[in-house]
Length: 241
Image 1 (cartoon, rainbow, N blue to C red):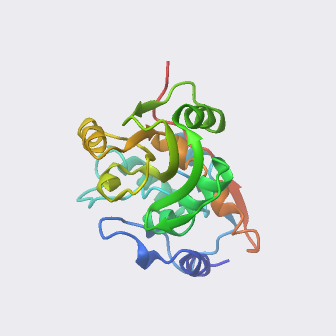
Image 2 (spheres, rainbow, N blue to C red):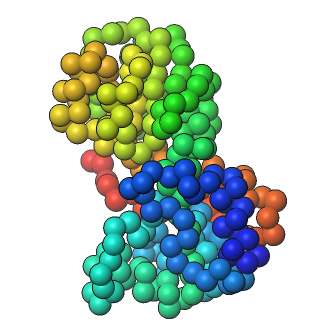
């Protein structure tokens, strides 16, 4: 398929014009007329994935490799070395970030990864009506996400009726959450203070762990296309001891 045809398919699936104003989703590298036979699906790009990638292929990532403006490619500071290697190997790049969060990823994570029934959505927030204790929820999350420890901020309500969930980093959404407990990643100290003042418990499900399912989520939508889609697992930048 031509790169332009793949882009059009993805744009119909999850329109790029629905991304947030600060985001940089869309076609970031490549020529629209390029013929693509192999597509790699990944949360991010790392050295190992780029080394193994075939020339004249396409990466579809969740996080945009090019996020802020670059004034030069003269150094090898991230992400410049990756960009130059992709240009050398004629590898194209499409990123589906906040548009895909809203259209597919949060719902997929809630239902397919956590095993809950989605009640409704409001933008980035996916809501689940439930009958769970706080301790039961912690045990469930450890099992489903294979986590030995989970950071929490407990506001005092032991019996939970409604959860709000956002993959990735959702701390800025705390003022808009209408639930007993909010599950997301990358919570900051002052965000936890804000949540406690609002009687909202927080559970940090971590950024990588909550979004690594991106490739599997997208892969099922590409099955009808005449391309070889390979699910790739990038390295978690954090290690836990």
